[in-house]
Image (cartoon, rainbow, N blue to C red; front, side):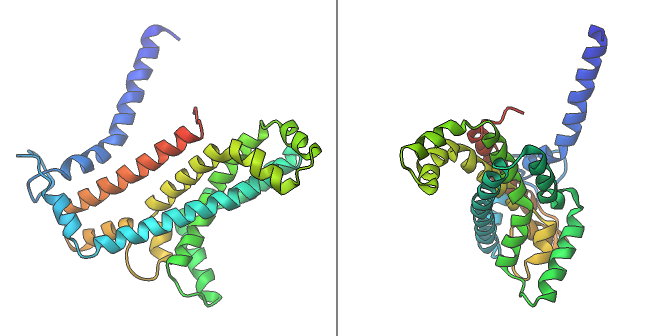
Length: 258
Protein backbone atom coordinates (compact mmCIF):
# COMPACT_ATOMS: atom_id res chain seq x y z
CA UNK A 1 0.00 0.00 0.00
CA UNK A 2 1.41 3.40 -1.02
CA UNK A 3 2.02 6.13 1.51
CA UNK A 4 -0.73 8.30 0.01
CA UNK A 5 -3.30 5.52 0.18
CA UNK A 6 -2.34 4.74 3.76
CA UNK A 7 -2.76 8.41 4.63
CA UNK A 8 -6.19 8.51 2.97
CA UNK A 9 -7.35 5.47 4.93
CA UNK A 10 -6.05 7.05 8.14
CA UNK A 11 -7.89 10.31 7.47
CA UNK A 12 -11.07 8.40 6.56
CA UNK A 13 -10.82 6.38 9.76
CA UNK A 14 -10.43 9.45 11.94
CA UNK A 15 -13.24 11.21 10.08
CA UNK A 16 -15.57 8.24 10.65
CA UNK A 17 -14.60 8.01 14.33
CA UNK A 18 -15.13 11.75 14.75
CA UNK A 19 -18.55 11.52 13.09
CA UNK A 20 -19.55 8.71 15.47
CA UNK A 21 -18.28 10.59 18.53
CA UNK A 22 -19.82 13.95 17.57
CA UNK A 23 -23.25 13.30 19.18
CA UNK A 24 -21.58 12.42 22.49
CA UNK A 25 -19.45 15.55 22.31
CA UNK A 26 -22.56 17.65 21.70
CA UNK A 27 -24.34 16.06 24.67
CA UNK A 28 -21.46 17.06 26.93
CA UNK A 29 -21.16 20.53 25.41
CA UNK A 30 -24.86 21.39 25.69
CA UNK A 31 -24.95 20.26 29.31
CA UNK A 32 -22.89 23.38 30.09
CA UNK A 33 -24.91 25.88 28.06
CA UNK A 34 -26.67 28.82 29.70
CA UNK A 35 -29.60 28.71 27.26
CA UNK A 36 -32.78 26.66 27.45
CA UNK A 37 -32.38 25.43 23.89
CA UNK A 38 -29.81 22.91 22.75
CA UNK A 39 -28.62 24.75 19.69
CA UNK A 40 -25.92 27.07 18.49
CA UNK A 41 -24.64 29.63 19.13
CA UNK A 42 -23.78 28.98 22.78
CA UNK A 43 -23.80 32.37 24.46
CA UNK A 44 -22.04 31.36 27.67
CA UNK A 45 -21.00 28.32 29.66
CA UNK A 46 -22.93 27.62 32.82
CA UNK A 47 -23.69 24.96 35.45
CA UNK A 48 -27.36 25.94 35.37
CA UNK A 49 -28.57 22.59 34.07
CA UNK A 50 -26.37 20.62 36.45
CA UNK A 51 -28.04 22.49 39.31
CA UNK A 52 -31.41 21.67 37.72
CA UNK A 53 -30.40 18.01 37.49
CA UNK A 54 -29.56 17.81 41.20
CA UNK A 55 -32.79 19.67 42.01
CA UNK A 56 -34.87 17.17 40.00
CA UNK A 57 -37.02 15.26 42.56
CA UNK A 58 -36.53 11.91 40.79
CA UNK A 59 -32.76 12.24 40.37
CA UNK A 60 -31.57 11.03 43.83
CA UNK A 61 -33.73 7.90 43.62
CA UNK A 62 -32.66 7.18 40.05
CA UNK A 63 -28.98 7.59 40.94
CA UNK A 64 -29.38 5.35 43.97
CA UNK A 65 -31.13 2.64 41.96
CA UNK A 66 -28.54 2.79 39.18
CA UNK A 67 -25.62 2.47 41.61
CA UNK A 68 -27.35 -0.31 43.55
CA UNK A 69 -28.04 -2.29 40.39
CA UNK A 70 -24.66 -1.84 38.75
CA UNK A 71 -22.59 -2.49 41.89
CA UNK A 72 -24.62 -5.56 42.85
CA UNK A 73 -24.59 -6.91 39.30
CA UNK A 74 -20.86 -6.25 39.01
CA UNK A 75 -20.11 -8.02 42.29
CA UNK A 76 -22.33 -11.00 41.46
CA UNK A 77 -20.85 -11.21 37.97
CA UNK A 78 -17.34 -11.19 39.44
CA UNK A 79 -18.14 -14.09 41.77
CA UNK A 80 -20.05 -16.23 39.28
CA UNK A 81 -17.76 -15.34 36.38
CA UNK A 82 -14.66 -16.31 38.36
CA UNK A 83 -16.24 -19.60 39.38
CA UNK A 84 -17.23 -20.31 35.78
CA UNK A 85 -13.79 -19.37 34.44
CA UNK A 86 -12.08 -21.59 37.02
CA UNK A 87 -14.23 -24.53 35.96
CA UNK A 88 -13.65 -23.86 32.27
CA UNK A 89 -9.89 -23.62 32.78
CA UNK A 90 -9.91 -27.13 34.26
CA UNK A 91 -11.37 -28.79 31.15
CA UNK A 92 -9.97 -29.19 27.61
CA UNK A 93 -10.05 -26.00 25.59
CA UNK A 94 -12.28 -27.40 22.81
CA UNK A 95 -15.01 -28.20 25.32
CA UNK A 96 -14.53 -24.89 27.08
CA UNK A 97 -15.02 -23.04 23.79
CA UNK A 98 -18.38 -24.74 23.26
CA UNK A 99 -19.56 -23.83 26.76
CA UNK A 100 -18.36 -20.23 26.37
CA UNK A 101 -20.38 -19.97 23.16
CA UNK A 102 -23.54 -20.88 25.08
CA UNK A 103 -22.66 -18.50 27.93
CA UNK A 104 -22.23 -15.63 25.45
CA UNK A 105 -25.46 -16.40 23.60
CA UNK A 106 -27.45 -13.57 25.31
CA UNK A 107 -24.85 -11.08 24.03
CA UNK A 108 -25.44 -12.18 20.45
CA UNK A 109 -29.22 -11.67 20.61
CA UNK A 110 -30.99 -8.32 20.15
CA UNK A 111 -31.46 -6.53 23.47
CA UNK A 112 -35.20 -6.21 22.85
CA UNK A 113 -35.57 -9.97 22.40
CA UNK A 114 -33.64 -10.63 25.61
CA UNK A 115 -35.70 -8.05 27.52
CA UNK A 116 -39.06 -9.40 26.34
CA UNK A 117 -37.95 -12.97 27.08
CA UNK A 118 -36.87 -12.04 30.60
CA UNK A 119 -40.00 -10.10 31.51
CA UNK A 120 -42.17 -12.90 30.12
CA UNK A 121 -40.23 -15.44 32.18
CA UNK A 122 -40.55 -13.41 35.40
CA UNK A 123 -44.27 -12.83 34.91
CA UNK A 124 -44.99 -16.48 34.03
CA UNK A 125 -43.31 -17.82 37.18
CA UNK A 126 -44.94 -15.17 39.37
CA UNK A 127 -41.92 -13.02 40.25
CA UNK A 128 -42.77 -9.36 40.84
CA UNK A 129 -40.67 -6.95 38.79
CA UNK A 130 -38.27 -5.03 41.03
CA UNK A 131 -34.62 -4.08 41.43
CA UNK A 132 -33.84 -7.76 41.99
CA UNK A 133 -35.24 -8.77 38.60
CA UNK A 134 -33.13 -6.03 36.98
CA UNK A 135 -30.00 -7.28 38.78
CA UNK A 136 -30.65 -10.86 37.70
CA UNK A 137 -31.27 -9.70 34.14
CA UNK A 138 -28.08 -7.63 34.10
CA UNK A 139 -26.18 -10.60 35.49
CA UNK A 140 -27.18 -12.52 32.38
CA UNK A 141 -25.56 -9.78 30.27
CA UNK A 142 -22.47 -9.00 32.36
CA UNK A 143 -21.35 -12.40 33.62
CA UNK A 144 -20.06 -13.52 30.18
CA UNK A 145 -17.64 -10.57 30.10
CA UNK A 146 -16.19 -11.50 33.48
CA UNK A 147 -15.97 -15.16 32.50
CA UNK A 148 -14.10 -14.37 29.29
CA UNK A 149 -11.66 -11.96 30.95
CA UNK A 150 -10.84 -14.22 33.89
CA UNK A 151 -10.68 -17.30 31.66
CA UNK A 152 -8.17 -15.56 29.40
CA UNK A 153 -6.03 -14.85 32.46
CA UNK A 154 -6.34 -18.42 33.76
CA UNK A 155 -5.41 -19.85 30.36
CA UNK A 156 -1.86 -18.59 30.84
CA UNK A 157 -1.77 -19.26 34.57
CA UNK A 158 1.13 -21.37 35.82
CA UNK A 159 -0.63 -24.20 37.64
CA UNK A 160 2.67 -25.44 39.05
CA UNK A 161 2.41 -22.75 41.73
CA UNK A 162 -0.89 -24.18 42.93
CA UNK A 163 0.45 -27.73 42.70
CA UNK A 164 3.40 -26.73 44.88
CA UNK A 165 1.03 -25.35 47.51
CA UNK A 166 -0.99 -28.57 47.38
CA UNK A 167 2.18 -30.63 47.80
CA UNK A 168 2.97 -28.62 50.93
CA UNK A 169 -0.37 -29.60 52.46
CA UNK A 170 -2.72 -26.80 51.40
CA UNK A 171 -6.31 -27.74 50.68
CA UNK A 172 -7.81 -26.79 47.28
CA UNK A 173 -9.75 -23.94 48.90
CA UNK A 174 -6.73 -22.63 50.81
CA UNK A 175 -4.56 -22.85 47.70
CA UNK A 176 -7.15 -20.82 45.80
CA UNK A 177 -7.40 -18.16 48.53
CA UNK A 178 -3.65 -17.81 49.13
CA UNK A 179 -2.24 -18.39 45.63
CA UNK A 180 -4.75 -18.06 42.80
CA UNK A 181 -6.97 -15.28 44.15
CA UNK A 182 -4.19 -12.77 44.99
CA UNK A 183 -2.77 -13.20 41.48
CA UNK A 184 -6.19 -12.86 39.83
CA UNK A 185 -7.47 -10.06 42.09
CA UNK A 186 -6.66 -7.12 39.75
CA UNK A 187 -8.22 -8.99 36.83
CA UNK A 188 -11.35 -9.87 38.80
CA UNK A 189 -11.79 -6.33 40.14
CA UNK A 190 -11.25 -4.89 36.66
CA UNK A 191 -13.73 -7.30 35.11
CA UNK A 192 -16.26 -6.43 37.81
CA UNK A 193 -15.90 -2.72 37.03
CA UNK A 194 -16.42 -3.39 33.32
CA UNK A 195 -19.53 -5.41 34.19
CA UNK A 196 -20.75 -2.54 36.40
CA UNK A 197 -20.23 -0.07 33.54
CA UNK A 198 -22.27 -2.26 31.18
CA UNK A 199 -25.04 -2.57 33.77
CA UNK A 200 -25.05 1.16 34.51
CA UNK A 201 -25.47 2.06 30.85
CA UNK A 202 -28.21 -0.45 30.00
CA UNK A 203 -31.64 0.90 29.07
CA UNK A 204 -33.66 -1.71 27.16
CA UNK A 205 -33.43 -4.60 29.63
CA UNK A 206 -33.78 -2.23 32.59
CA UNK A 207 -36.87 -0.56 31.10
CA UNK A 208 -38.67 -3.89 30.71
CA UNK A 209 -37.67 -5.53 34.00
CA UNK A 210 -37.62 -2.63 36.49
CA UNK A 211 -41.30 -2.57 37.33
CA UNK A 212 -41.38 0.84 39.03
CA UNK A 213 -39.21 3.90 39.60
CA UNK A 214 -36.37 5.06 37.39
CA UNK A 215 -32.68 4.52 36.89
CA UNK A 216 -30.51 7.15 35.21
CA UNK A 217 -31.06 5.80 31.66
CA UNK A 218 -34.83 5.44 32.14
CA UNK A 219 -34.96 8.89 33.79
CA UNK A 220 -33.43 10.34 30.60
CA UNK A 221 -36.14 8.60 28.58
CA UNK A 222 -38.92 9.80 30.90
CA UNK A 223 -37.59 13.37 30.80
CA UNK A 224 -37.40 13.37 27.02
CA UNK A 225 -41.06 12.37 26.80
CA UNK A 226 -42.20 15.45 28.74
CA UNK A 227 -39.72 18.18 27.83
CA UNK A 228 -36.44 18.60 26.01
CA UNK A 229 -34.08 20.73 28.10
CA UNK A 230 -30.32 20.61 28.68
CA UNK A 231 -31.07 18.83 31.97
CA UNK A 232 -31.20 15.66 29.87
CA UNK A 233 -27.72 16.47 28.58
CA UNK A 234 -26.45 16.88 32.14
CA UNK A 235 -27.84 13.47 33.16
CA UNK A 236 -26.41 11.92 29.99
CA UNK A 237 -23.01 13.50 30.66
CA UNK A 238 -22.98 12.19 34.24
CA UNK A 239 -23.91 8.73 32.98
CA UNK A 240 -21.19 8.94 30.33
CA UNK A 241 -18.57 10.01 32.88
CA UNK A 242 -19.43 7.18 35.27
CA UNK A 243 -19.40 4.60 32.48
CA UNK A 244 -16.11 5.76 30.96
CA UNK A 245 -14.39 6.05 34.34
CA UNK A 246 -15.48 2.57 35.41
CA UNK A 247 -14.48 1.06 32.06
CA UNK A 248 -11.05 2.74 31.96
CA UNK A 249 -10.24 1.66 35.52
CA UNK A 250 -11.41 -1.86 34.69
CA UNK A 251 -9.28 -2.01 31.53
CA UNK A 252 -6.27 -0.70 33.45
CA UNK A 253 -6.68 -3.26 36.22
CA UNK A 254 -7.09 -6.13 33.75
CA UNK A 255 -4.00 -4.92 31.85
CA UNK A 256 -6.07 -4.95 28.65
CA UNK A 257 -3.99 -4.16 25.59
CA UNK A 258 -6.60 -4.36 22.82
